[in-house]
Length: 335
Length: 147
Length: 116
Image (cartoon, rainbow over all chains, first blue to last red; front, side, top):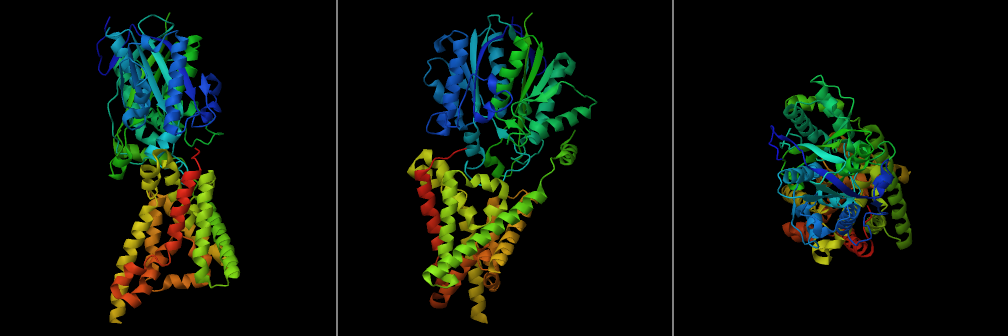
């Protein structure tokens, strides 16, 4: 049955997660979730001769794991929806040129995971298609090259900086029942709180996360207590404290709120500044740690709010502020 | 919450910077490079029996060489992380900006990669050095004509 | 004694730059450009020459000395060539540094691979 939008949200009845493939880089492998990924690599080249090709290799491997686990071939999938950080979404496009199925890209910066999966869920729920694989990736070196500085440049990063996660996640969504379903989605508005520091993404994105979270709760008449855990994608230390303060001003003091940027790494012992960022951040944490908790029935329902900062270096040089967006997706155990 | 209130709140909660530690490091690393440069300068003055003015370009070339080499080896950015301005203010910073840009663009080939991108970060220093010297040079030339 | 003076001046210039970097949103690129212009300016009245006489290498290695060298070369050439000397002599003293930087950057880019 197809669902209608309630405000900016939608309850989803008939979309399930069949499998997920996760690959990650060496810093992520040394983090608290390191053992949960299907494959990790010793360096950022992943055996290729450029960082961009390395990122593509990681995404290919993630896709292979995803399909293997579901016992499917790439041509069995109706549609692929991809999201990565690079200009023209080259990671996904250049990967998909080898697969003869329909594919398109969506750009939401680091909100790619929730964005691509929310879209996939809507398409399946609308009975347009039976299954979708979403492809999400980010890579520390390719992101640094594109958005910031050359990787060997001797710059002292500011304390509010976040560390782009290196990783790729491929998720298979289907209308055939499995143990975990996509339960609801909320598509976010683009919010600009006039922040202009490209070294402080958490501060720029927190208002967007707040807006989507409040919208989700309002549309579906829910609160933090309706979930075992609510996570934002990559606000990291500083950003997530800001969001908690914004909630506190509305007298909301959640005990079950955390941020994937703080969960992916050991913030105190790894050199990651405020924590993780990038599309892969919310994807890796959601589809390893939380997916496992749901499969083991240690949690019943989890809300993931992936956050993205929609800036480009050119806009920053033109003295523009940073518009941000957050999209939400909730996963639930099927009884 | 409007943007002004948000900014006030965010400023209060900002992570405490390590300004004092960074400044101390900048002073120490910068000073250390100063001592090293002085040693190199005196070595060249002795080898070539020349004045300080003549040995200066040799010293500069040596420092540039070392900075480029450390950049290529992937060591420079680890030093610079701690040193901050201690490494970007001396001529080593300029050498690093050029070599890191060139090295980074290696995958785009000789022309559109290395050749085009070398001056991406270092170009601004050369541009404003020349522009300011030209303007100030004209001013001084005119002053000498009159006095 | 020379070593101490070099240490102090070089360290001091870096300290000022670090303070600017900490307290403002200026990037190293901005700060270096600013210091180069300051270096040129300080040579306008031969101030930087005095600094080099006292602090030797300490005054020769910060990027300010690049501005000073450009200015110095330009001024020296004006004595022979008039106003054209500014452009003709500008790189006389800085040619070594820039040529070396270009050459070694090129070699580094050919030989090494970026690590991240």
